[in-house]
Length: 271
Image 1 (cartoon, helix red, strand yellow):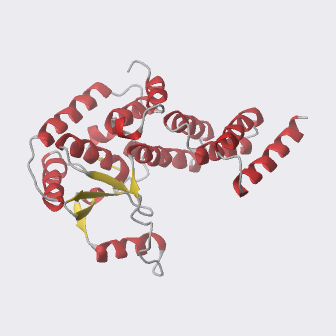
Image 2 (tube, helix red, strand yellow):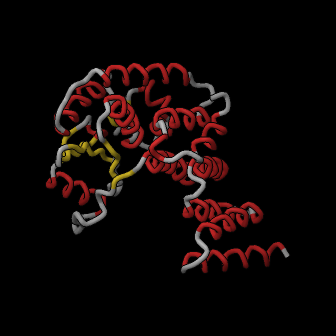
Image 3 (cartoon, one colour):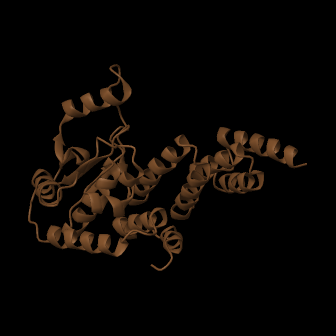
């Protein structure tokens, strides 16, 4: 734990079921805010886990309600609609200090608590808005952690996708795709990366991208995306390194052909 990036690299070798999602999110937060009190954040999350482990609820709906009572009501966690793009909303240390954040950052607190309670809960890769789904006994309860744990039925989900994608959008296969722990952490970091790119902080975005690669070294699209940022900034050697790793993971197909074309362009400039 003395070196957060070493912790990320170690996590990158683990199977997903062994990832402690809150512990890894704290390491990511330490990198972004090295001056912050991460040990206080860890202690607070341990207390939430202890309280969650004492909860008793038999169905997905009751479990969702129990965690809403614990996290949203007792501890006061909520979505930050006023300063949504503040990078603090994606830093788990700052989220624990402020009791507010982005949907995916809040979701990590909920997933951490659910794991301590021994309940089956997963993130939902809903377009533009991270959700949680509680599973059990052939039932499912979907909630919006940004909205304080508000339950969502099919009508609510249909309205949400229309707000995100436009009035013509409809629920379709794949919009409720479950997310494992690694993908939740990547979604968290992607929020930071995109905000830094929009702000013109290319180096900060690249640092974030490299940390994502430490966490998920076998995720081919991440290597291509990181290479493209290096490519745009004229860092040819770094771009080639990332493109080569992408081709190792994805040697065939249309994407591989496009990457080989990009590499040829870069090498022509180097020569």
